[in-house]
Image 1: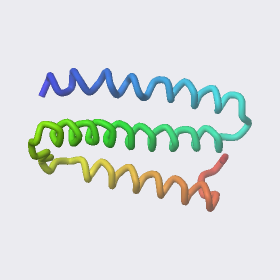
Image 2 (image 1 turned 60 degrees about the vertical axis):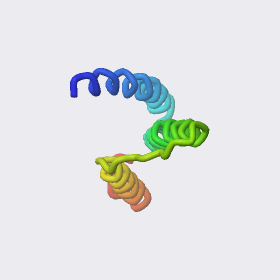
Image 3 (image 1 turned 90 degrees about the vertical axis):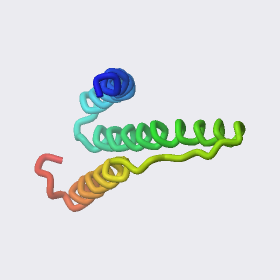
Length: 103
């Protein structure tokens, strides 16, 4: 478990810190938070799509070339995707209907 955390944390920091600084710049330059929230949602969507899809595609191509069967064991991936989609939907709905004070 420790080796898993030791490998995931630098990857998470490497993909999230540049997004944090870019979002801060957008929030400071713009008077409202609309562009900053759009930047956050876009960055997270790209991170999830590329962070999950690209390694999966590379692994499936690798196993297809070797003639092996590519098997992915069921885990908590579906929960994470559903959680992100739900949070994104709620945030966009709240922003669209103006229920968040100050935005």
